Length: 134
Image 1 (cartoon, rainbow, N blue to C red):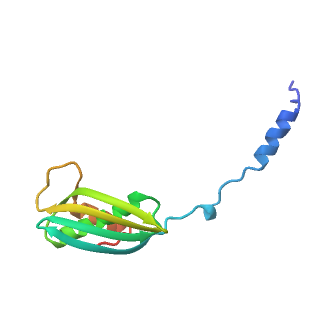
Image 2: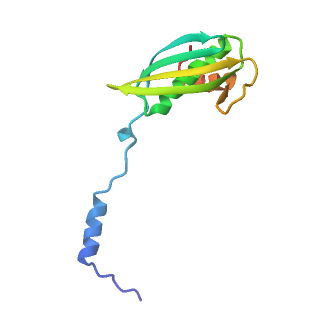
Image 3: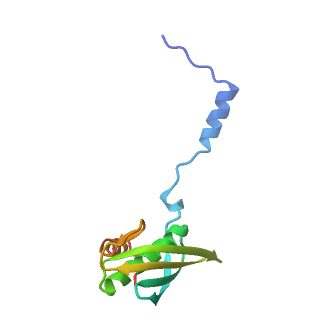
């Protein structure tokens, strides 16, 4: 035989607290809505290239760095090369405008170093994700 559980003041407080919980609606989730504002490409020396990008709506520095990487990948392919090596990226944000300044070396062969990209693979991924390129 089952006995009824006693409702205590603590139980009532817990029920009241749970009553205030609501499931998050998909409409309340902030969606990633980037506005890619442009790419400036400068050949610094031979295979050394500088990419400056600007965007709004970035979630973080990674979104800006990815935009610069996409520019580097497409530029590498345009120049007839297959690979790039990332040297540095600096990112700043002021008034909701994010700016990235990245430097890559481009090469026909897989370069030495830790941060290298296969330009075809990266460019395809950028295109699939709607990230503009050079």
